[in-house]
Image (cartoon, rainbow, N blue to C red; front, side, top):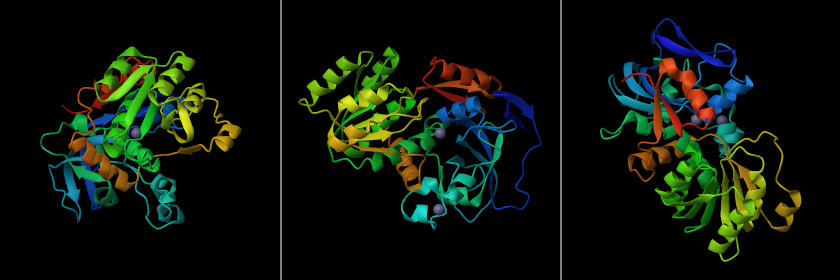
Length: 338
Ligand SMILES: [Zn+2]
Ligand SMILES: [Zn+2]
């Protein structure tokens, strides 16, 4: 089978021996496609992904071999996430499933950018779902990234009809605005510097505008919120400067959801947090319950994703990485089988 393997900060296509169940519980899945996640790019660039790693985790495919106590059977179209919590440790008991040691150690094998993968019984039982007939592989490939977003949106614990500003309208911003609307019926604003992204967001009930000038962006938000600022700001931008924009646009007593790493790893002003009673918190990766919500939002089409990905075949995977880094496309989907 073909895999895309990391070598010297690039993806190289290699032919390796097929994987089989060999008596194990679980399933072998023929991967039809795998979304390219921002975290794959960070891992490749920083070297967190060592040579020999197969990246990719937003997988969809068809079961070709199975041995399991679940309802899944051979030939089923399936979507799965890659990590599973133990449900028993102190992190899990406190709801911080993505901090669980077991969560971090579990994975699909060898990785999503591969013609076939092994999914364990644990995956099948906790984080995998069958595809409805009317859904394409490409649409359901947003299951894992939307799961991450759902977790962050739930952790914000907003009241119904709250106001939200999403900073950064790439695919994560586009999905999170829709998730806030679906879960809390929010009035959601969004900002970015790229006009195509602003236009796309406006089509899914995110009132989007250009934030090139921060003081104008602040004025825009204040005018819309009786001078108050929004109840929550959702940070999807990896630019350090946007931290200041968030502090300007959030109302006193409001919340800032940190959902991206920033180069300087530095930023939220202590005194603003103190005097203005701000809550700044992060959210990382999804728990099984968040994935369930994600699946429901996608299959009910409350969150719309149709037509937003650009397809690349496995041989062109490095192009997909490069085009994503250069903001040439919105979201890459590696189509491994037609
Ligand atoms: Zn991801
Ligand atoms: Zn645990």
